[in-house]
Length: 194
Image (cartoon, rainbow, N blue to C red):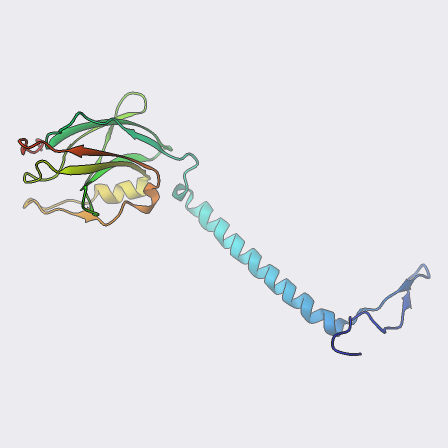
């Protein structure tokens, strides 16, 4: 038998219990192929089971309902201390946060959790920029985070010497977000009351 022939060729036929001819299988050639197929199928099942177990262990990472967030654009120019409002429909356990950056910056500053209001509304009072940022444009972002991410951000405190922190990007789970660009006025440098 040549190497490229079928494992079923040139084998003497055998008879089954009904007297019908049955071909013999050359298990020397079929066995390794079957073994490889079974190993591959087993590996695929292990990977799929692992992925499903991870998803089941952390269901909050993919919300069943995608957050829908809107920001009401404030009249411009804005003062440094701004009260911003909007609406949000987010999965249970999610909170809405606001972050900002100067129009020419990439880091996100002044992360602030909003206060829910009637219906799906929210409000937040926050400082936009610093005292020297008059006549600058700022982009304000609203996004929803789950309980775990909210606990991490809520636990961050800055020192009394006005140190600050920032994020290089919005949290990965923020996904859908709303944004509005605003212009600071040239005279208001007073921060929000603490």
